[in-house]
Image (cartoon, rainbow, N blue to C red; front, side, top):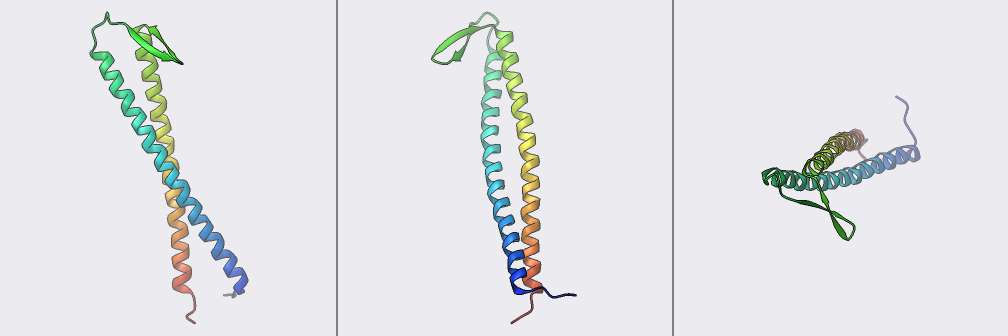
Length: 122
């Protein structure tokens, strides 16, 4: 096995450390985004439950800027369910991204561990 110079080893080590740090930061951001999207989705689910529990002749209003517009019940339910589906898709994509970032971070950590365990003792 060919030995690498100290400078080359140092560069490799720094690169692996940077990968680990970047993966960890991106993973934390993804987890925060997942938590925010889950809150939004739960609020939408509660809103949908409340709307479906109302009687059919109740007027529904939607906030538009600084005013409220009356919206027919079927339209409101459709919009909310569409928005909930979009949030579910976003959550699915974020979960996949978080899983990838977690794997990338764990791989970098494993590489660092291997380097330090196999390094010659001085």
